[in-house]
Image 1 (cartoon, one colour):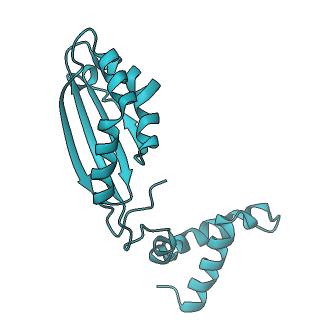
Image 2 (cartoon, one colour):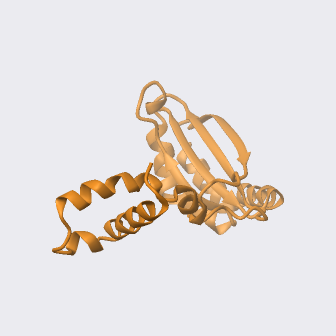
Length: 170
């Protein structure tokens, strides 16, 4: 097992290598590089991980996972409605769009939209949804998009909070 001085030297060399300084140096020899690679295992990964930004534990922000199951052949109608209207109406009512997905594999691929929203708090979520559902523009958009039949068969909704080890959501 190498002594403290050797570990410190290896750590310094590895740190410089990771920052790109040693690889630019003409004095860097292949043997020095190979000998110092063992020092990479000594990098303080816990210190690095601790330095990553974390979610604010005092935050009241809640996230909402929503899964929409459409009637057969209606997913494209739903995606169009979200793309052209719904996401903008969410923002109008204080509902932040985080991300949207569609599955890659059948049977969900042709009938499922998955997305995450955020709200300042659980109470705000309830108020935001009420304002959204009461919005005449939303009612008009929904009714027009459903002229050829209902689009959404079922909605699953789950409210969530970030864990203390979660990276912040952008």
